[in-house]
Image 1 (cartoon, rainbow, N blue to C red):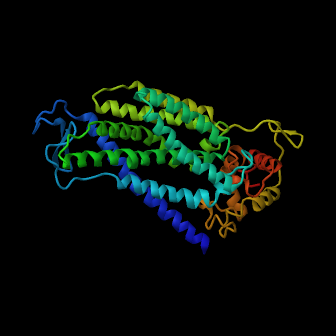
Image 2: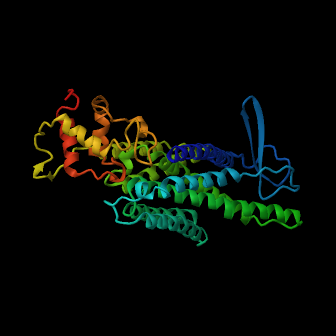
Length: 403
């Protein structure tokens, strides 16, 4: 019953995280689009303080938006704020990190083949990275570097961190750690810089003082940074469904590449919103992804196990031997009645209780247990290299022949 309740908690948190994340990303994309699409100077300013305006039509209605250089002469009421979308996205994301990756750190963070650390050590390192990521990024923004300098130094530091994290955590945990850190940076931008700056502008106006435009400049800078980070973070949120990326030998390089592509795509749209069409950006992005996909095509392992070459002519194996391995190493989770506490239901609906089911999922077994080596998860059941070789030989000889 406890695992069943845990599964519902995971589902509800993930659904909520998804809902509020859409709201945050939607407002971020909209306001960056609005800012880059304004008519400057405005076509129809109502007062001299207007920096730009824009007319739009949506849902059968016409809208006229204006942006002020700093603040309007009179503060309107009500004044709508955009903050809880960011806060609830981070809160639900951290809750997911807690109940899934921290509570089950020995499964989702620790991989003994990567680093021999305990679950407690893994969680401690994870929390320190969340904190350090924000502190270092915030220091960069206050260092006096221009936006290009911040982007260059920030990317280099991020690339080093991605590599470093991949040497500490298992692939899936490493990817999620980077996404959680960047999500923390984005939310902290809102909480520590954007909203306090906006409050100070309002407070200065209410005191009858001239507001300092620097608060608006800093807020816009952090908002644009969040805009560029969004697409790579969204990829990380999806990545746990695609072990071909996080389980690859060079998973760190793949993640760095995906980040470059994500930023390029976002930059293309931001330029397009300003009336600048740069087709080279999406073309290069597609070429990079194509080359990456080719580079990580699964290939049979080479080498020697038990004195036999992997690329020698495969020997036929009996199905009973295969079923014995599956029963010993996989059925603990992939069953109509799983016995492992972290799997109240068979993951992805894959059940391997019967011979027919094993043959049905032969492709998946080969892909996950032999090629990507992501199953068993964190190798909880201690499958051996000899057993992986046996599964490989079965698949290559007679998995699809009813034997």
